[in-house]
Image (cartoon, rainbow, N blue to C red; front, side, top):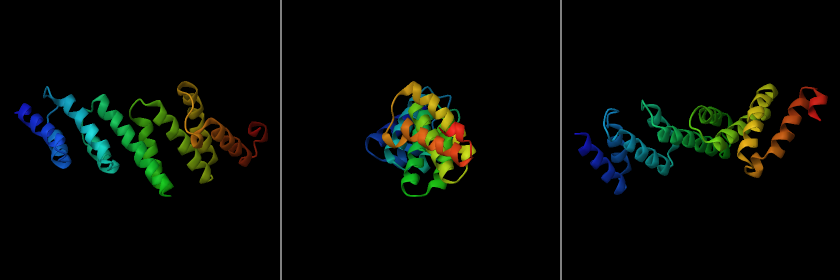
Length: 174
């Protein structure tokens, strides 16, 4: 019964048996009255575990997903991207920043992903791609307010101007 499975999964989570809790929550059918609560608990466990790749894989395998699980997917994607980026694996971070843009509703994650995508494309000499990612960043940052200095509008404007400069579009660069 779904109530027994849900209770078992919840108890496993409370006792920090993460693997057992994850496996049990995944078995709860979408027709169960516990399905959305199970997804919420599952999303919390996956993010807390800090194994973002595993979290992303598990969430991608679930259909349908609750709004909370979509948010966890966005957060896990962003955190995995930034972890790879910090480790110097910038090109490996690109698809995770892209996933951040397609999931969830957290505008801060979206804005920062646009920023980092714009920066990474700039570093790779792909100035058109860089400009294309900074444009939505500028729109979002107006809505959400200031971000960290390293992903601030000032840094983005500087990089965007340099994109135009590198393409010899001097009037737009100023």
